[in-house]
Length: 427
Ligand code: GDP
Ligand code: IMO
Ligand code: MG
Image 1 (cartoon, rainbow, N blue to C red):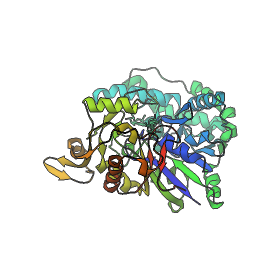
Image 2: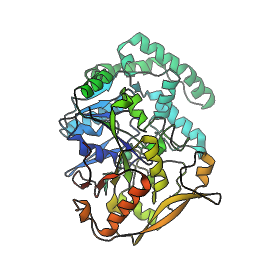
Image 3: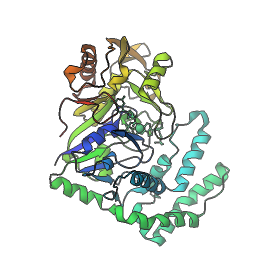
Image 4: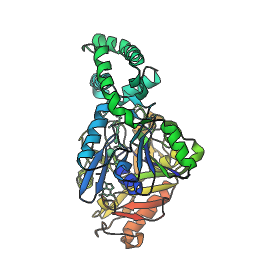
């Protein structure tokens, strides 16, 4: 019953798509358990590059069944455009399964996301504008629309009415916007029902039966640990639980079934959107990381904020996720620096702090304490084993491993599937 969780150990964009795709060939199911099309997962297969947003990265592996779990929020228009984009490129998507309990991102949720961000002004979160927060808010407020609601027009109408009641008051009276008509929304949503029907399934049952039958199930997180609504840098977070526990609630699988939790960890740090980021660089080094690492958002096209590796965050990710392994990505990007600073602790109000402070104000004041590690200049993109890496690159990996609290079981040295050094097998 091997069930693996693969998740972001930092602020997202660690290379989860590549890692999932790499394992996709050996697993039976790849499951998204939270988030929605705020994710942007890049997968490079040969000379082909795919950008996936809502679909699990396992969709590119022919033997693998991709699953959208109950914890995901689904924008049907995005779903169908992503599916048809893949079909046009010859990818078979017919095995996809979508939970009937997954919530739908409605057009009004997208509107609310955009207007609330605009009204926050300087205090905005910098969301992806995809309606993620408002859709999860509706879910918690018990006025959400689920996939299964598309198959009962009367229930759907009542639910859209309930959801729009307060929203229209807010849109018209507070935000000076036009009200949204219930009928129009219902008609649009019903328009997806037939097309969606072949994919809708009781995914909780399917996945638990698969585990009972000794199939391999991989849970693919979107976003990252520090963007988690409970464990991230609140309020500068997304509205779901990318951390390991989210796989249980977001897919309906008990924690006793999870055998391995793999944290995807970039060899430096990036962040998109607002919020604290102690090792952020505003100098030429930051610019170089952005340029060499191609650090531009897959979903929104925004430049990613870049900084040095932060071991305090990695240790925190190990703790809150119970990580068994790390997959270190983008080591190749660091080639060429004479010395590489690594943040080993913070200084907060004159005191050295080894662990992530729970207080938001303290974290906003955290200054990185750096240790300098010697760099390397050799091209490492062709390395196939750990011993083929230059000594200083090996030492960098070993130092990160020691500081981060879990073994580094794979190393990415380029975006392609085969540009990976496997140290310990994940399966
Ligand atoms: P995700 O959201 O975690 O799936 O990550 P993104 O796809 O948003 O961003 C990671 C980027 O780094 C993508 O462009 C990947 O193709 C690329 N990438 C992943 N692993 C490596 C690696 O080891 N080296 C290099 N150079 N690029 C990588
Ligand atoms: P992947 O899966 C990086 C960030 C947004 C914003 C905050 C809230 O590609 O790693 P939201 O639209 O979710 O309400 O925005 O979260 N964010 C991401 N940052 N990678 C992502 O996904 C992200 N998804 C959301 O930039 O700061
Ligand atoms: Mg991404």
